[in-house]
Length: 549
Image 1 (tube, rainbow, N blue to C red):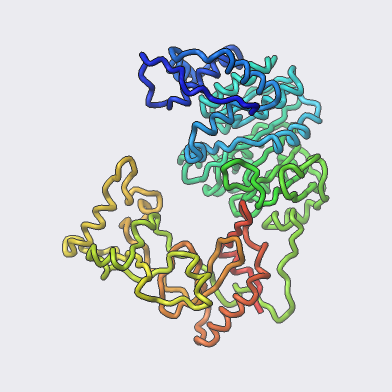
Image 2 (cartoon, rainbow, N blue to C red):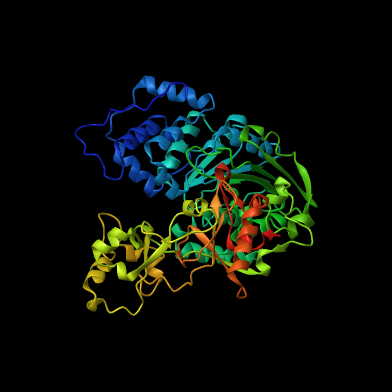
């Protein structure tokens, strides 16, 4: 950042601070205006204009600060975006899917895109404009369209591109998935980092759009898909044969069920050219626990293979045209692409081995939707007078790792609230009082009963009647899964999976199964879904596919 710092003062004391913007945000936005944000990119939207009006009376930025910021932008830095990442909390940026892309990823992606003869470049979900700015620095005359839903971000993009004196740029504060992008003759490139927003935070209307759009491509889209899948579909809907693109997203779509949409698009209409997976132990995005996969594509093409590579860190990416050729047929048959890209061996074994699914089923632990409400210490449950409505529970994966293969009940074990659905609350006033506490707002937080999981249960407190699993398994850690017998019939919440033999088996055979699973646990590494930092997660069907002796 070349020593540039955000000025902390400068707000006109006669003007009250808007509740919509913090003091650092007002100062940063005033800086963007002083850099020329209003002089480039086309007309402002109403949302952008509202922000501008809020800071017009704020003191102007000091000339020395303006000079330093301009110099940093010209030198290839993104001081405005970096400042925004500091003045907005990671939690707030996560809600918007705003994980800004580091230069180690931006540069090779732009190298690939700009190696083509282009007539226009689209930066969807532009954030502070890192891809658009990088393109302007290399090709000042290239027409560029930058789009983002956040009006603050689009104003920062305007300021950065204004400093760079972009000659043919239009900036839209809009929803990329539904934005009416004008057609042009010639080739368009799509390049960027689609926002990562989980399906829980997407509206019913957005989910209707993604299902409807998926049908256009002959694919049923899961409503569990995150926003980055929507961006792939929106791009496929807009791209014309010959258009090219390069996106970096979380890598989870390579393996999860909802990711079949992206895999389908790359093998069909989008014409995937290459796939580059960054080792999950690397840190591709600052302060975000996220993996990264970079894809290049040419719409309308049908290459016989894709170039695939797995690299240890973003700095190892190099030329995105390189990589091992993986045949289209291999990718079409593979349900999970991480193993293909990373060249992990399949978990094959001798004839004496069998997959877990042949003898057992794996189910998730109970999803409460509010563990802090439903899980209590024994002492707290007794103090509240609700211990009679609780049962012992395994509430931490660490309990499984420390169990030595058998997990037992005991006086220190936590309890799970297990009230029945037909409860006569009036007959049990102390339990009713506790349930009423879950129906009341807490400060600015909604009540427990209004949370996503709880509001889809009837009544909201009833967790169902899952039978205790004979074997309990950890499913997410930076080590292989651990398995433990559950002779005391403890309940399990969703920090673990339960393993249920498909046929009744004797206690001795059950113990042999648990021993076989723990003996072979090292061979299970690499057959789940790997996330940032080497964290590996096994979904129930993936655990059922494990081979045991």
